[in-house]
Image 1 (tube, helix red, strand yellow):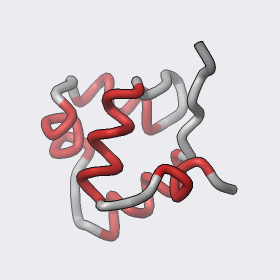
Image 2 (cartoon, helix red, strand yellow):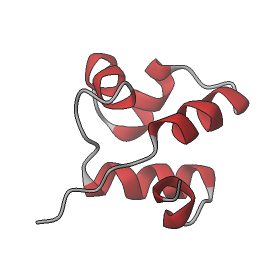
Image 3 (tube, one colour):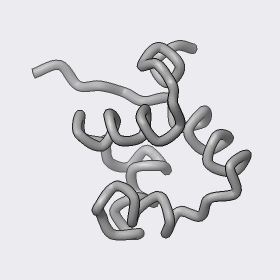
Image 4 (cartoon, one colour):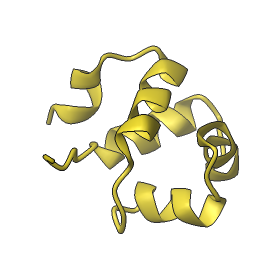
Length: 68
């Protein structure tokens, strides 16, 4: 399976623009805040299911997070 590399900088900026904490994002995704921080910091990758939830949460198309 191809690994999906989400542009974490765009995610960080979008999260901050929407005044959401990492804890709030983690809760929305159904994961722990420790796991979310690891993923936002690039130490781990988001699952496809988590990426879909993020796209829906912010009403963005996939190319928003996967373009440079």
